[in-house]
Length: 260
Image (spheres, rainbow, N blue to C red):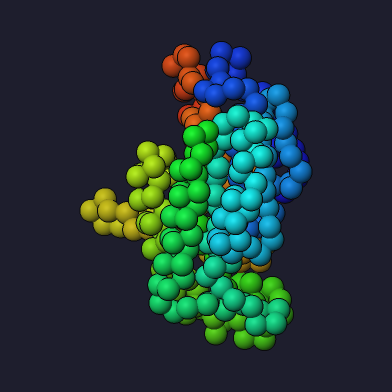
């Protein structure tokens, strides 16, 4: 993802004081390279990212375990944003992918790793964690982008993957609630409302929004996701001193919603 997506977000408002020391840092763990891998420890936006391409949740939790002590030493108090799940749900067949399980076995594996991550964090006084929900994926679009002759045969797997991800995200929201954390809901961008009779709204899934390859977000979606996460770090790491600044952040959130 281009550096300017983060670099041009602008400095934090002058009247917002740090909730923790100014070297406080948010750590975002991602399976895919949504952010640059180098540290972004600037005065305006203290952020450090740990990324591993193709990593399962277990691998990322192991990464937390090995790096957390030094991270706390560098920044005194940290908030970890753990973003995983996609690579736990699928498996490779050459250059193509398929669903790993047709039941909820993968969900249980991921949930167990999330609980393991919480257990690791609980042993450190100056660390917190929250979980970002899992975006929807299209196995058929991925295989199509890799030259599969009959990608439409994976449409059923798209449906099953969506069901599994919705189940996983429900688990994520519950874990965040127990941690007294709000949930960063990336999956919301994949749903669109359709008006029905009597004022009712029916949601439908839009897998084509991941227009790059069915897995990795394109330029516009990457921007929307990044802004969503950055806005959340404000609420986690800073104390709002004036109501007007709270409104200013909310306006930016509305800007995000207007992108789609």
